[in-house]
Length: 181
Image 1: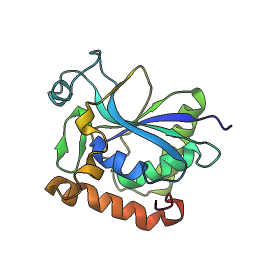
Image 2: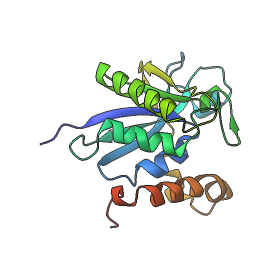
Image 3: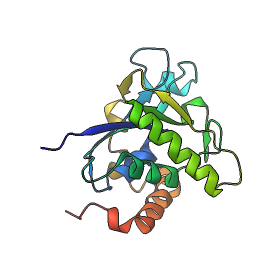
Image 4: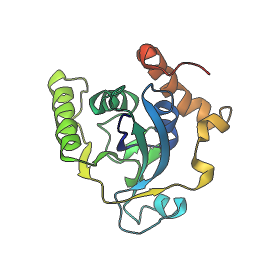
């Protein structure tokens, strides 16, 4: 039986990341949550205050036989802007920063290499600001944040902010989508 790996990524609102990664072939589970701060077990309200130091993240469990960590990162860097410091679209604050919270030295090396490759390819006009830092702790978000897009597809935020990211992902990575149920 293949071993599952885990990645923890911050790229703005966790609802956006979750909506994309749960459709990616090789992903077994996606959990929205918080990482990178000082307070244990923070609430959404505390994280949004900007006082805990946490970022909104997704923790992605994936099958490395079906999806490499590098492939996961390539999707990640397609669905968010790694050049905006503490901001993604209308969401602003340190909780919306771009970061890879690595679990192993191999993930750290891969993340740094992917960032170097993106910089060398000059895919973005601005410098990359994505942090590559060790995962210290992960705290799952409250239940109402989980599977948010799937349960609230027609809410305005989902339609205006999340849906374009999902559509871009689906168009660019059609061959990597999970089969429809």
